Image (cartoon, rainbow, N blue to C red):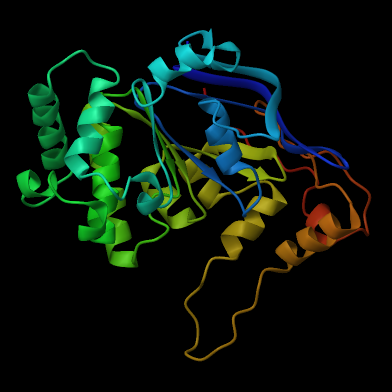
Length: 321
């Protein structure tokens, strides 16, 4: 049995004109120690999927259907009290902006100790020792000094290391990382992702990584899901999809990556992504998601756009377990 299994998850936002469908019956699983990537354009539903797992969807959003099974128990059906025992304890989350996560008027040590004592009946001194150990694990220099500092006294990269340390405080089974390097420069991004990968491998923690960066996904994750308009349109082993994407939208994303070319040359966007934008504006549906076991896109009417024509008869032979 998978550690986490999402079945037909449907999330909606109640707006004045009717319900807005943010997730449309998505299904996926995550095993112990596995690293899974969620990719797609902004608004595809990646963060909504992550927030739904811990039932952090704020009103007017709500889970309209489906199951979120963690070790066989449905998180979507749990009470708030039951969920508090799991949030930060069994399933931890790393948010995009550390300054929005950390309390600016409390020291790093105070915040870490409070998080530990919320789930463990131990003394403040013992909790501080655990916090110190986690700061060492994420390679923060002078960790004893950092415990007594405030978030604004740390650099962006160091704040993100603190957030990772907080995620590891209670030895979780799953870490959900929502764009964990968005606010950092490229050099620090590489350091943070290498650290996160090392910690997950060493501690055998499952990782769900949400990102726009296909380069990061290809280096960190073992399996990936491609999302568009609230649906999972392609999923499978990361290297297989990167090297041989089958769905036209996935192909467009990969080909939209910057390529080496002549200095000063113009960057030409992939025409398939233009076709996607035009179809969405006209309300024309995408080619359907590729099924797990036989991911062939059914034939569609020709002449609508090159995006749809490329979807005919595509098939992936190897599938994830």
